[in-house]
Length: 175
Image (tube, rainbow, N blue to C red; front, side, top):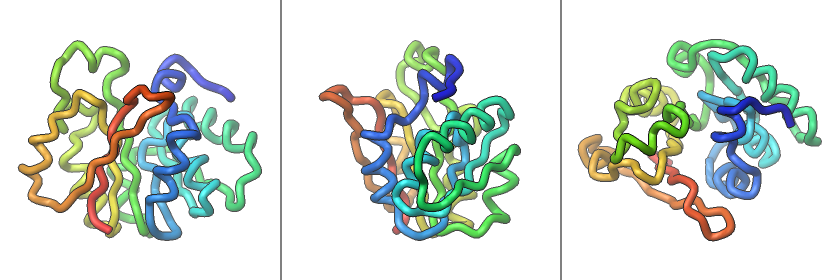
Protein backbone atom coordinates (compact mmCIF):
# COMPACT_ATOMS: atom_id res chain seq x y z
CA UNK A 1 0.00 0.00 0.00
CA UNK A 2 1.02 3.59 -0.56
CA UNK A 3 0.94 5.69 2.61
CA UNK A 4 2.46 8.90 3.90
CA UNK A 5 3.13 9.60 7.60
CA UNK A 6 -0.43 10.78 8.29
CA UNK A 7 -1.91 7.94 6.27
CA UNK A 8 0.14 5.40 8.18
CA UNK A 9 -1.05 6.88 11.45
CA UNK A 10 -4.73 7.28 10.56
CA UNK A 11 -5.44 4.40 8.16
CA UNK A 12 -8.41 2.28 9.12
CA UNK A 13 -7.08 -1.27 9.09
CA UNK A 14 -9.33 -3.77 7.34
CA UNK A 15 -9.83 -5.99 10.41
CA UNK A 16 -11.48 -3.02 12.14
CA UNK A 17 -12.97 -1.28 9.10
CA UNK A 18 -14.86 -4.30 7.73
CA UNK A 19 -17.28 -4.70 10.69
CA UNK A 20 -17.91 -0.94 10.55
CA UNK A 21 -18.60 -1.14 6.82
CA UNK A 22 -21.00 -4.03 7.38
CA UNK A 23 -22.93 -1.97 9.94
CA UNK A 24 -23.42 1.03 7.62
CA UNK A 25 -26.76 0.63 5.82
CA UNK A 26 -27.69 1.40 2.25
CA UNK A 27 -26.08 1.02 -1.12
CA UNK A 28 -24.38 4.39 -1.68
CA UNK A 29 -21.92 5.67 0.94
CA UNK A 30 -19.90 8.87 0.93
CA UNK A 31 -16.49 8.53 2.60
CA UNK A 32 -16.10 12.25 3.24
CA UNK A 33 -12.44 12.22 4.34
CA UNK A 34 -11.06 9.12 2.62
CA UNK A 35 -7.37 9.71 3.34
CA UNK A 36 -5.40 6.68 2.16
CA UNK A 37 -8.57 4.70 1.53
CA UNK A 38 -8.97 2.25 4.41
CA UNK A 39 -12.68 2.84 5.00
CA UNK A 40 -13.42 3.30 1.29
CA UNK A 41 -11.88 -0.08 0.53
CA UNK A 42 -13.79 -1.78 3.37
CA UNK A 43 -17.07 -0.22 2.24
CA UNK A 44 -16.47 -1.35 -1.35
CA UNK A 45 -15.52 -4.83 -0.14
CA UNK A 46 -18.86 -4.88 1.71
CA UNK A 47 -20.61 -4.29 -1.64
CA UNK A 48 -21.31 -0.58 -1.24
CA UNK A 49 -21.07 1.98 -4.02
CA UNK A 50 -18.46 4.33 -2.54
CA UNK A 51 -17.82 7.97 -3.26
CA UNK A 52 -14.46 8.84 -1.69
CA UNK A 53 -13.59 12.51 -1.16
CA UNK A 54 -10.42 14.18 0.06
CA UNK A 55 -8.90 17.66 -0.21
CA UNK A 56 -5.36 16.27 -0.38
CA UNK A 57 -4.67 15.24 -4.00
CA UNK A 58 -1.62 13.13 -3.09
CA UNK A 59 -3.50 11.19 -0.43
CA UNK A 60 -6.44 10.73 -2.79
CA UNK A 61 -4.05 9.25 -5.36
CA UNK A 62 -2.75 6.89 -2.66
CA UNK A 63 -6.32 5.81 -1.89
CA UNK A 64 -6.98 5.19 -5.56
CA UNK A 65 -3.80 3.13 -5.89
CA UNK A 66 -4.53 1.22 -2.67
CA UNK A 67 -7.99 0.33 -3.94
CA UNK A 68 -6.40 -1.40 -6.96
CA UNK A 69 -4.73 -3.88 -4.60
CA UNK A 70 -8.13 -5.44 -3.84
CA UNK A 71 -10.62 -7.23 -6.04
CA UNK A 72 -13.53 -4.94 -5.29
CA UNK A 73 -17.07 -5.87 -6.38
CA UNK A 74 -17.71 -2.22 -7.32
CA UNK A 75 -15.24 0.51 -8.26
CA UNK A 76 -14.79 3.48 -5.95
CA UNK A 77 -15.50 6.95 -7.32
CA UNK A 78 -12.75 9.34 -6.19
CA UNK A 79 -13.34 13.10 -5.92
CA UNK A 80 -10.68 15.68 -5.15
CA UNK A 81 -12.42 18.42 -3.22
CA UNK A 82 -13.97 19.68 -0.02
CA UNK A 83 -16.52 17.21 1.34
CA UNK A 84 -18.53 20.07 2.87
CA UNK A 85 -19.36 21.18 -0.68
CA UNK A 86 -19.93 17.67 -2.05
CA UNK A 87 -22.01 16.06 0.73
CA UNK A 88 -25.13 18.19 0.06
CA UNK A 89 -25.20 17.45 -3.68
CA UNK A 90 -24.28 13.77 -3.90
CA UNK A 91 -26.92 11.06 -3.62
CA UNK A 92 -26.18 8.87 -0.61
CA UNK A 93 -27.75 6.42 1.82
CA UNK A 94 -25.03 7.04 4.40
CA UNK A 95 -22.09 9.32 5.10
CA UNK A 96 -18.92 8.19 6.84
CA UNK A 97 -17.06 11.02 8.56
CA UNK A 98 -13.44 10.56 9.58
CA UNK A 99 -12.14 14.14 9.67
CA UNK A 100 -8.51 14.74 10.66
CA UNK A 101 -7.81 14.79 14.40
CA UNK A 102 -4.60 16.79 14.08
CA UNK A 103 -2.15 13.88 13.92
CA UNK A 104 -0.61 12.58 17.13
CA UNK A 105 -0.87 16.09 18.63
CA UNK A 106 -4.53 15.46 19.48
CA UNK A 107 -3.39 13.36 22.45
CA UNK A 108 -1.76 16.37 24.13
CA UNK A 109 -5.06 18.30 24.19
CA UNK A 110 -6.72 16.08 26.77
CA UNK A 111 -10.43 15.83 26.02
CA UNK A 112 -11.20 15.98 22.30
CA UNK A 113 -14.32 17.91 21.24
CA UNK A 114 -16.29 18.24 18.00
CA UNK A 115 -14.71 21.62 17.31
CA UNK A 116 -11.22 20.09 17.59
CA UNK A 117 -11.56 18.29 14.26
CA UNK A 118 -9.87 20.05 11.34
CA UNK A 119 -13.45 20.73 10.15
CA UNK A 120 -16.17 21.42 12.76
CA UNK A 121 -17.66 18.04 13.67
CA UNK A 122 -21.13 19.29 14.63
CA UNK A 123 -21.58 21.01 11.26
CA UNK A 124 -20.38 17.87 9.46
CA UNK A 125 -22.92 15.71 11.27
CA UNK A 126 -25.62 18.25 10.41
CA UNK A 127 -24.62 18.30 6.71
CA UNK A 128 -24.44 14.51 6.58
CA UNK A 129 -27.88 14.00 8.13
CA UNK A 130 -29.38 16.66 5.84
CA UNK A 131 -28.37 14.51 2.87
CA UNK A 132 -28.52 10.92 4.15
CA UNK A 133 -30.48 9.10 6.86
CA UNK A 134 -27.34 7.60 8.44
CA UNK A 135 -24.02 9.13 9.51
CA UNK A 136 -21.03 7.36 11.06
CA UNK A 137 -18.37 9.48 12.80
CA UNK A 138 -14.97 8.17 13.89
CA UNK A 139 -13.66 9.86 17.04
CA UNK A 140 -10.55 9.42 19.19
CA UNK A 141 -10.77 7.56 22.50
CA UNK A 142 -10.36 10.91 24.29
CA UNK A 143 -13.57 12.28 22.72
CA UNK A 144 -15.93 14.18 25.05
CA UNK A 145 -18.95 11.86 25.02
CA UNK A 146 -20.99 14.37 27.07
CA UNK A 147 -20.95 16.64 24.04
CA UNK A 148 -23.14 14.14 22.15
CA UNK A 149 -26.08 14.86 24.45
CA UNK A 150 -25.86 18.53 23.44
CA UNK A 151 -26.56 17.53 19.81
CA UNK A 152 -29.98 16.17 20.81
CA UNK A 153 -29.78 13.41 18.21
CA UNK A 154 -30.24 9.69 18.75
CA UNK A 155 -26.92 7.88 18.51
CA UNK A 156 -25.07 4.68 19.30
CA UNK A 157 -21.42 4.39 20.30
CA UNK A 158 -19.15 1.50 19.40
CA UNK A 159 -15.62 0.96 20.68
CA UNK A 160 -13.25 -0.36 18.04
CA UNK A 161 -10.39 -2.55 19.19
CA UNK A 162 -7.55 -4.38 17.51
CA UNK A 163 -5.69 -7.09 19.37
CA UNK A 164 -7.29 -5.88 22.60
CA UNK A 165 -6.20 -2.25 22.21
CA UNK A 166 -8.88 0.45 22.01
CA UNK A 167 -8.14 2.33 18.77
CA UNK A 168 -11.10 4.71 18.44
CA UNK A 169 -14.85 4.95 18.73
CA UNK A 170 -17.54 5.10 16.08
CA UNK A 171 -20.66 7.13 16.69
CA UNK A 172 -23.67 6.19 14.58
CA UNK A 173 -26.49 8.66 13.97
CA UNK A 174 -29.79 7.77 12.29
CA UNK A 175 -30.66 4.49 10.78
